[in-house]
Length: 129
Length: 206
Image (tube, rainbow over all chains, first blue to last red; front, top):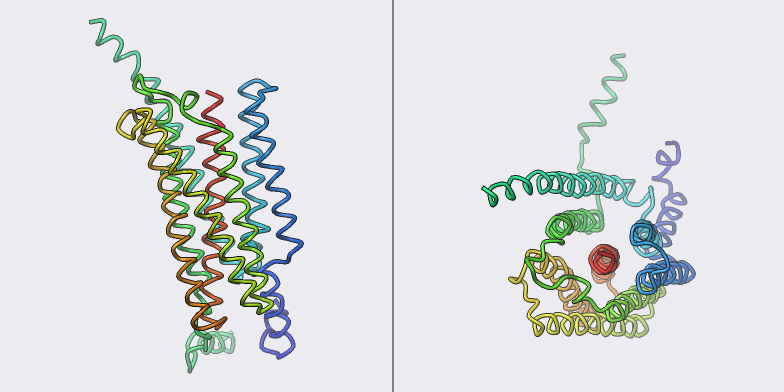
């Protein structure tokens, strides 16, 4: 809190601007690190699905895990997300969006799966009758 | 207590509007737009998740998808991400020529991605796997097509910005626009991670 209070000072404002610049554009090292990580995180799922060394269920779990990690890698190294960007509002908007996305995705899949499960026998019975 | 209240009133009723430099809220506003775009994609993913197994007796993912082609497409987007990153680094170093060159490379990778996707779509349609064939194909074309349209508009935006920078140089307004496109471009990459994982890779496992 005290740092925010001194934000009007010349040095603090300058530091802040430098800091923002660095954070908004990243560094060459950061981009290479993000690129190397995403190549690995993309190649392994493709390799797992093409050569199929594991069962379908295990493969599905692993590639979903890799996708989640790769999304976080892109957020950090390419989109330069952090808790301080835009005074924390970017992160707030992102967290809110993630909550809505998780609710709508899992809700749709859950409700529609059970609807299909419960509809099928009724339809069979109507065909039989 | 009354002293505190008086101070608060002063804080809430400022004699003058606080001064914000022009465009200082653009980046946050653009981020909000991206988050709402994210919700559009979430709905399309949910639709695909619900309808993705309704083949209506038509072809399924196993018969249709060509994983090496998808891997090639994914690498195009990945390369375009790092070249856009290099363009942004050149922008901070104020090297306009290098920045324009990196933007051109990024645009070419974007065009390569679009060409491969159009080739894939044309191949599917040629095999009779048209959007109206089954609910699976309708939701597939809607989700992947919407992402492709985003990449197309991103590429057009990129060309427009290259012209802008050519005409007016690296003025603050142009730098701001380039940063918005940077967010847009990398955001599309994040969406593509979801597409290749949930549509193509998971489809091949079914």
